[in-house]
Length: 426
Picture 1: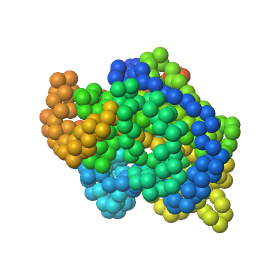
Picture 2: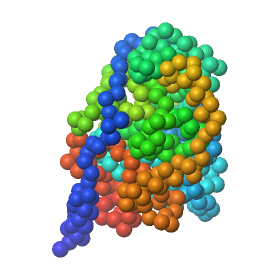
Picture 3: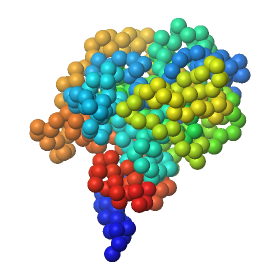
Picture 4: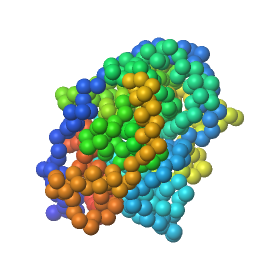
């Protein structure tokens, strides 16, 4: 029997083993279902679109989402999994770690929950691609603005009557008294990229993204163990590219257990409103027939406008990897606000923010529940504990259409011995 046949047998055995233990393709907890989403065509006028594009050009380099903490500081960037970076390669040896902001330690990416699931499951499309390609697809570029009032364009949008009305349609009926605006960010995709299934950074009365890694906050939401402290919020996503028809890039969301995602088309000037911190959502691959620029997760990957050529450049550690015309790019502006019943509710939140939970307290609740489930092992280190928490509680959807909803082409990242075999079929 030839080497190719042996390879097929080995790969088939791996796939059958995966299929045997495969969970249902959609198993979201009840508290993440049944929440509204509102579509609004022509939300932005042409002048605002031009203003947003001009402002984006002037912002400088936009980092990829794997480096989101370049835009803000996290008091506890890790839960103890951090290890020194490899001084020879300047990379991280463990498969799910990346260099921290100082490039001294290796830590879980802030949204490892999102990236890990996308790499292993292949996203909405059930992609079967090598690790280097698929990890590049899930690195769109993002810019966070927390002091929105210092920027005229987002300030004008936040304080408009249209925004207030659209936002309040999503806030729970008993929490529409005060909209507490707190974040504005830009999310930009080049052809071949996507936004993987995720929930937005949650906010609790006693926990937020400035204190804890986002993957831990997402785990807290999925688990339901911290629901009494959860703060409802609203995100309005508005599209400010100028193209009118799209090849992919649709906004997908899950609000029931029917198995199929619902979708919203990212038409120019349109917007949708949803509480993304409790509605799982994603974007389809934008221009799926095109390959994304290959971006090493250990590198500093950025998108920047070149004023001389009037083009957008994707850079990896300062080296230009790909160049795009502006009409090739998908631009989204995201506005976020917290929903409060009244001023007293808002004041209670601010008091809670000044009295944050400790990391030991949060991990202690998880450990107690993991013990009750019979999955906790004494002496487990922080790296394995983080992976166990995500595996136990977070359940992003698997592709509803792929025959086999796992990306076996990325197996070699975890199991290097499969690399020669997978090259024959991937």
